[in-house]
Image (cartoon, rainbow, N blue to C red; front, side, top):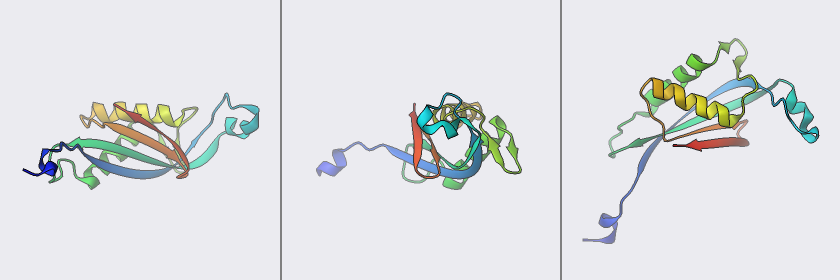
Length: 124
Protein backbone atom coordinates (compact mmCIF):
# COMPACT_ATOMS: atom_id res chain seq x y z
CA UNK A 1 0.00 0.00 0.00
CA UNK A 2 1.41 3.41 -0.91
CA UNK A 3 1.67 6.25 1.59
CA UNK A 4 -0.94 8.30 -0.28
CA UNK A 5 -3.59 5.68 0.45
CA UNK A 6 -2.86 5.99 4.17
CA UNK A 7 -3.38 9.76 4.27
CA UNK A 8 -6.64 11.07 5.62
CA UNK A 9 -8.07 14.03 3.78
CA UNK A 10 -10.77 16.52 4.56
CA UNK A 11 -13.00 17.66 1.72
CA UNK A 12 -14.62 21.07 1.71
CA UNK A 13 -16.88 22.72 -0.86
CA UNK A 14 -16.64 26.51 -1.02
CA UNK A 15 -19.41 28.77 -2.32
CA UNK A 16 -19.01 32.50 -2.94
CA UNK A 17 -21.47 35.33 -3.56
CA UNK A 18 -21.03 39.07 -3.83
CA UNK A 19 -23.35 41.88 -2.84
CA UNK A 20 -23.18 45.62 -2.51
CA UNK A 21 -23.60 46.60 1.11
CA UNK A 22 -23.26 49.44 3.56
CA UNK A 23 -22.10 49.57 7.15
CA UNK A 24 -20.32 51.77 9.65
CA UNK A 25 -17.90 51.38 12.54
CA UNK A 26 -19.23 53.71 15.18
CA UNK A 27 -16.12 53.44 17.39
CA UNK A 28 -13.59 53.97 14.58
CA UNK A 29 -10.29 55.46 15.78
CA UNK A 30 -9.34 58.97 14.69
CA UNK A 31 -6.96 57.77 11.96
CA UNK A 32 -9.89 56.15 10.15
CA UNK A 33 -12.70 58.37 11.42
CA UNK A 34 -14.43 58.19 8.01
CA UNK A 35 -15.35 54.56 8.78
CA UNK A 36 -17.73 55.78 11.49
CA UNK A 37 -20.02 57.10 8.75
CA UNK A 38 -22.08 54.82 6.55
CA UNK A 39 -19.94 53.67 3.63
CA UNK A 40 -20.26 51.29 0.69
CA UNK A 41 -18.37 48.07 -0.04
CA UNK A 42 -18.62 45.23 -2.46
CA UNK A 43 -18.94 42.43 0.09
CA UNK A 44 -17.77 38.97 -0.84
CA UNK A 45 -19.25 36.21 1.28
CA UNK A 46 -17.70 32.75 1.25
CA UNK A 47 -18.91 29.69 3.10
CA UNK A 48 -17.28 26.29 3.40
CA UNK A 49 -19.27 23.10 3.75
CA UNK A 50 -17.62 19.83 4.74
CA UNK A 51 -18.34 16.93 2.38
CA UNK A 52 -17.65 13.23 2.77
CA UNK A 53 -16.81 12.11 -0.78
CA UNK A 54 -15.57 13.30 -4.17
CA UNK A 55 -18.94 13.44 -5.89
CA UNK A 56 -20.28 16.67 -4.50
CA UNK A 57 -22.27 16.15 -1.33
CA UNK A 58 -23.02 19.85 -1.74
CA UNK A 59 -23.36 21.35 -5.22
CA UNK A 60 -21.72 24.78 -5.67
CA UNK A 61 -24.70 26.54 -7.25
CA UNK A 62 -27.10 25.21 -4.65
CA UNK A 63 -24.78 26.40 -1.85
CA UNK A 64 -24.66 29.84 -3.48
CA UNK A 65 -28.44 29.86 -3.32
CA UNK A 66 -28.27 29.00 0.38
CA UNK A 67 -26.00 32.01 0.92
CA UNK A 68 -28.27 34.38 -1.00
CA UNK A 69 -31.32 33.12 0.86
CA UNK A 70 -29.58 33.48 4.25
CA UNK A 71 -28.47 37.03 3.42
CA UNK A 72 -31.98 38.13 2.46
CA UNK A 73 -33.52 36.31 5.45
CA UNK A 74 -31.31 38.17 7.91
CA UNK A 75 -30.88 41.61 6.31
CA UNK A 76 -33.07 43.82 4.20
CA UNK A 77 -31.88 43.79 0.61
CA UNK A 78 -32.74 47.18 -0.85
CA UNK A 79 -32.34 48.82 -4.23
CA UNK A 80 -28.78 49.95 -3.43
CA UNK A 81 -27.69 46.83 -1.54
CA UNK A 82 -27.77 45.44 1.98
CA UNK A 83 -27.67 47.62 5.08
CA UNK A 84 -25.44 45.71 7.51
CA UNK A 85 -25.81 48.59 9.99
CA UNK A 86 -22.97 48.82 12.52
CA UNK A 87 -21.94 45.20 12.06
CA UNK A 88 -18.36 44.11 11.49
CA UNK A 89 -17.34 41.45 9.00
CA UNK A 90 -16.95 39.06 11.94
CA UNK A 91 -20.48 39.72 13.15
CA UNK A 92 -21.90 39.39 9.65
CA UNK A 93 -20.15 36.01 9.31
CA UNK A 94 -21.52 34.77 12.64
CA UNK A 95 -25.07 35.89 11.86
CA UNK A 96 -24.90 34.39 8.39
CA UNK A 97 -23.78 31.09 9.93
CA UNK A 98 -26.79 31.20 12.26
CA UNK A 99 -29.14 31.75 9.30
CA UNK A 100 -27.57 28.84 7.44
CA UNK A 101 -28.05 26.62 10.51
CA UNK A 102 -31.73 27.58 10.73
CA UNK A 103 -32.10 26.21 7.21
CA UNK A 104 -30.10 23.09 8.14
CA UNK A 105 -27.07 24.05 6.05
CA UNK A 106 -24.11 23.81 8.39
CA UNK A 107 -21.04 25.73 7.26
CA UNK A 108 -17.66 24.92 8.75
CA UNK A 109 -16.37 28.43 7.99
CA UNK A 110 -17.79 31.74 6.80
CA UNK A 111 -15.73 34.61 5.41
CA UNK A 112 -16.85 38.17 4.75
CA UNK A 113 -14.58 40.41 2.67
CA UNK A 114 -14.75 44.12 1.88
CA UNK A 115 -13.80 45.03 -1.70
CA UNK A 116 -11.59 41.95 -2.02
CA UNK A 117 -8.99 43.53 0.28
CA UNK A 118 -9.84 43.00 3.92
CA UNK A 119 -12.06 40.51 5.61
CA UNK A 120 -12.77 38.13 8.43
CA UNK A 121 -13.01 34.36 8.70
CA UNK A 122 -15.00 32.59 11.42
CA UNK A 123 -14.76 28.81 11.77
CA UNK A 124 -16.80 26.21 13.61
